Length: 109
Length: 348
Image 1 (cartoon, rainbow over the protein chains, first blue to last red):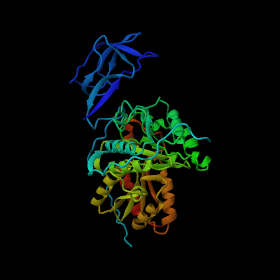
Image 2: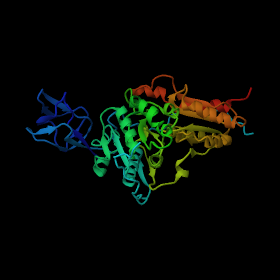
Image 3: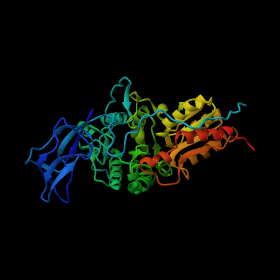
Image 4: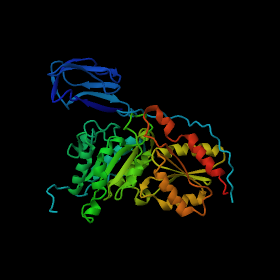
């Protein structure tokens, strides 16, 4: 298993930090990709941040009311070693399938 | 040019003791290779989008920033021209940059830096400014990625004078070829087959020497036909060889590894044994690397060839995204048809 840290992303033009309002997940919980993780407030608005990926939550940073700077760790996931990258899927290992049979006999001369 | 003020340390680190071979995925093998490079070459630096804090979108640089520090493993802005431009400057100042372009489709914005600077600097400076840059490019398809996240750029890079191009097919090859590439004074485009990142294989560490790292590799011997491939297509060709054996056809699979320079002698030696050749690649047919392979084989083996060199490739369309890639990437049946065609060919 590997740990994957997700830092607070830039939530809007020029915003450098956000205040944690409420955590919607807790350590130990298995989350799906795009599941709302946390509600944060910036100087512009309150927003729910979706999970960038599936995995088990290991740690969260910032109690409600605390400020987190853009780029600082927000949440750490535990992911399987064979988890897909952020884009795409892991190809399945399948038994090779064929429809074509070779019929030619190679001349040996 | 006056002496640079940026001091890059020399190569002083000792190689770690070779460990017993172990089962690693290609992604883990590449991570280990990068760690061993950073540990043994104080001038090596890793840079790119999300390679630091995040550890790379495919986890290839996982943990490296924590171990070697943010001065040697660092995130860059989302600007490939900047990543490669910075690598040119670092190389001129004595560093050995290992930049990453996050996906092959993102290499296009950096083509000016790759072609007009990295490929030419050594030539332009009469050998005084070599470019010891190893550009890692997660390449090819097979993971159902969206557009711009899967390409097959080997012919484009192989066409550029001054660049070397290599693509590993197994975790073992990935570890050793990356270490070899990083120790070269020349720029190397290192094409990592994304669809093979997760498959495990036995990896031995330490160094295996230039004889083991150069040229092509016979991945499976056979006597009736040579299948020529690189990157992710090697595994598929090995599957095809297994199936062809059921029909009594012994297929030799040649893993080219180096796409520039091409191993002309290795190609010729294999085809002289089998007298038939099928080259398989994901890139479109027209002006693909298969054309160069076919020309080399024909030049060297014209008298022994029993059939024209067959090409089984992608189609002349943009690399498709999502499930459509199944219709595009050469599949087992298309490769078997290619073999059938060279087997049944008779001179008229």
